[in-house]
Image (cartoon, rainbow, N blue to C red; front, side):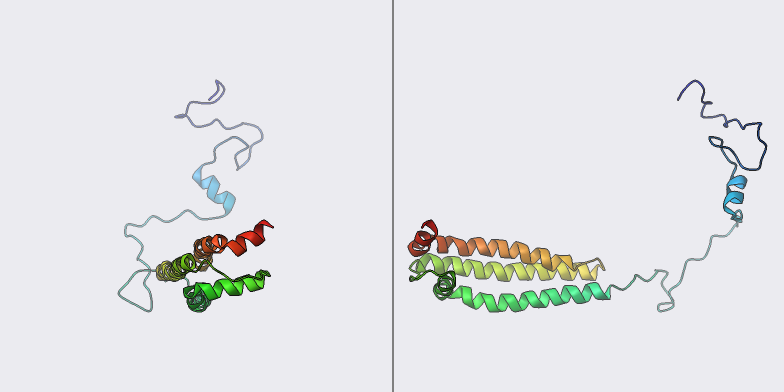
Length: 187
C-alpha cells in the first residue's frame, strides 16, 4: 500500500469530473451500480430457504442426476475385452516357454535351438502369471472407477503398458541367458 492509497476502512474517493452513473477506473462501484452495469436486478431476500431440487425418477431423493458416460464405458470395456483376449492367448504360449523361445528365435533369424529351458520354464510361468495378475488388477481398478462414474478409458491402457513392461523383463531374462541368442546379439 502506498501513501496515496486510502486506508482499507475508508471507501475510495470518487472523481468529481466527469459526472456520470458509472465509476471511473480505480473507483469502487456500489452494488446497485454493479447490477445496473450488468443489467441484472437485485436478488430478493426471502425469509424461507429455496426448496431443494427433486429428481423425477426418485421423488424421495434430492440428488441431481449425474451425466451418463456411455462412450467412456464402451471404450473401457472394449479395451478390457481386447486385453483379456490377448492375455488368454499369451498365457498358454508362455507356459510352454521353450516352444515360445524357439518361435521367437526363428522369427528373429537365429538359426539355433533354445537350450536355456530350465530358466525359461521358470521365467515363462512368472511372465504368464504377471500377465494374468496385471489384467485382473487393471479390470478391478477400471470397474471401481466406472462405478464411481469417473473417466476410466485410460486405466486399461496404463495397465496394459505396465503389465507388458513387467512381462517383457520376465521374458528377456531367459532369452538373453541362452548362449545362441547371446552369441547372435554380440556378433
